Image (tube, rainbow, N blue to C red; front, side, top):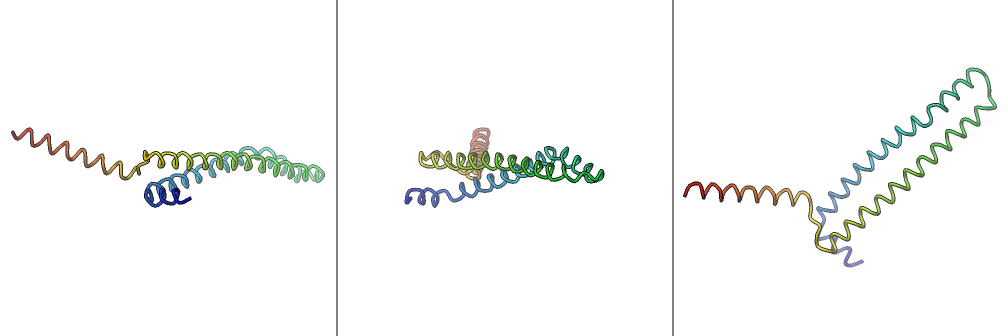
Length: 129
C-alpha cells in the first residue's frame, strides 16, 4: 500500500490525466448505452401505446415488464463491461508506473516541444557557420 501511495504521489499529473480520460470514456459509454436502450425498447413502447389506445390492458403490464427487463439486462451488461474495462485500465497504468515506464502526456508534449526547439537552434547555429 505504501508503494502504491508513492507511485500516486510521484505521478499525480498522470493520474489526473487518466482520471479525466476515464471520465470522458464513462460519459461516452453512458450516452451510447442510452441511445442503444432507446432503440432497443422503442418497438415495445410503440406496442404499449398501441395497446393503451386499443384498450387492451392485460398486455400492457407484460410490455412494461419486457421494457424493464430489456433495460435491466442492457444496463447490467454495459455496467459490467465498463467496470472490467475501468479496472483493467488502472491496473495497466499501475504496472507501467511500477516499471518506471509511465509518463504524463502533457510532460511528453513539453519534452517534444523542447527537443524541437533544441533541434531548430542547433540547425540555425550550423547554418550560420
